[in-house]
Length: 236
Image (cartoon, rainbow, N blue to C red):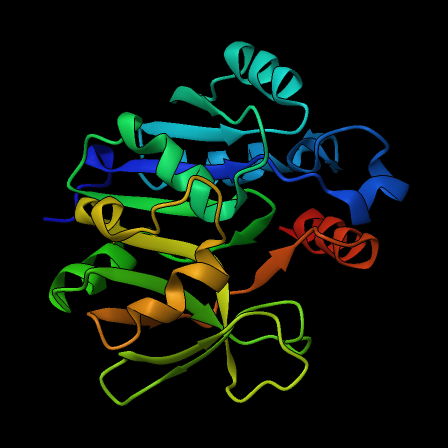
């Protein structure tokens, strides 16, 4: 029931990474060096170690550099590429990758975040809740840069508020989601949109659940968080 080798994974790797350029220059954010290896290698190795086999990388900014690297360094995975010619946002990137997804349920991750969640437990949760969509929730001190999420006693998501100064919940999105494949049929009609701003609020009260984990969450979106990730991952 929870065989991860049969589950396709979409990794969002097309971000511009403007806030990180003081540290990485023109290098794509997902290829930022963390203790001698690209950050995305750490994420993909974790996926491979937990049993996933097929990855779809959604590329955009500096797509040629990312694709060239992962054509040579597959890390034992089957890696395919869904390339954006123009920025499509997180939702548009997922929607564009539809033709690559063959599994009935699929995993989506932000390529600039890392969380040591058990994906097997997350999938089991998604199935047992009969969920249409599920997201990993964690706690962090700095909530203003992450989606704040409120859940009820059954872990159903009751409110989703993307990147707000006024956080109303202890939980934030870790940028990790399970979707049923039918989700493509109810996404916004436009090509470019944000999954966080333009879609998740519409899923509230529609079999949308939050999987809470106490595992650490790292994000390399800013120079300070990039340095923190280097320090913490160096200890593992």
